[in-house]
Image (cartoon, rainbow, N blue to C red; front, side, top):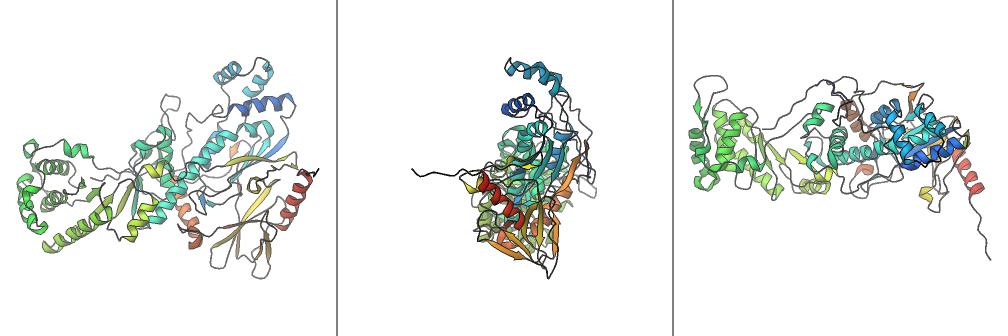
Length: 566
């Protein structure tokens, strides 16, 4: 049976010992406001606290700072990334407080020389003066473009760094991985996340389920994720259920009531009769099929007659079809099979051919279109290969490679100070890709006449925004390579950043997980196919305005050290 259940649940007491991530919500409801209890101010690196004390000691607590959170390279050898984790970031910022026990712990680990007044300062610290601008969650994003712009008092903004990074890094990586699987499978194939048992711990498993759904998966096997995030949950049975039966005599209940009522029918007798008929179709002896497997299938089918989906091995198709036809006699419809070993393309085609043959021979039209699920250590390349082999699979159940992001285990977001008291700050490096864009910036996405995104353009904050015009050209420059520049006449210009946190409250209504999931697909549709292809994708352009280019290079030359030959 493949269960697909979506339901609501009551709020969970976040003060309890369970690792609660979010209160479940009904479809269409506003996002949950509860916060994972692990996400708190102490979920940080010690050096954030030590810097905070040094800032405090230096009298820099009220200095106004601007930090950019961004990444330098798209993951998985691709040319796009999905931004995720914003809702969790906002919950963290909203609930940012040091508790009495936090302060007591910090007193115990920081040097004795730390002044007591600093701990009083931390105890009363809030994010009321912080402003957070962000790209909409679920939007496709690219290197160097800030995903978050955090401005406010230097100490507070510094203390937010590590937690914001951990909330964005895995979420964005996971959503991107899921989106790539969706593109590889195509829009008509169902994708189910089966990775909880292989995930990086309980919280990693819950996060993976949430962001896999956001990235385009249709459901999860993770029951708690289904409850907390209102994600459809799916599952059938394991090999253990089948191997728990060894002979037909173990089938204690052999009768099933027809769907439309009537006298109970002996399903074992009916299944054995069908197996005799089908053996001729399969060109095998009925005795070649396992008796224990037939007993297991029948017992599971009687438990779930409206949703029977069986996990089969290479010889289980005959028994499954016998049980499916028995259910059909009683007015029920089996759902299909799951294959988790062997040559998936060959086995799926063999099963589909047999379903179609039985459908035609016994005049049962729906039998030909039963679901075939595959779940055998599948990754993105596996799906692409199966497509080339013209598989007959309707649904993939994907675990390890999806939830652990084995192809690339980290996104590599960074959090850089770009402005202090209105003065730009710039990270210099001998590696050009590590040089940061200084100063508070604005970011725009420029679209062409066909509706596809052409380029993301960063400008200085306060600089006039580019305009949509068929006649007026906007010059876009590569931030570091002088010869790379292009004119763009956009048909549409979109400001990528919106203010989500200001005046100590969330400023915008937050979309549901389902709505963010839809945004992911819409955003990906705005990219050309060559940018999204698996092999050698075309890099998407991120440029800077002429004014920002000049400002960047003047500042670079002003602060870059000058060598000396001796």
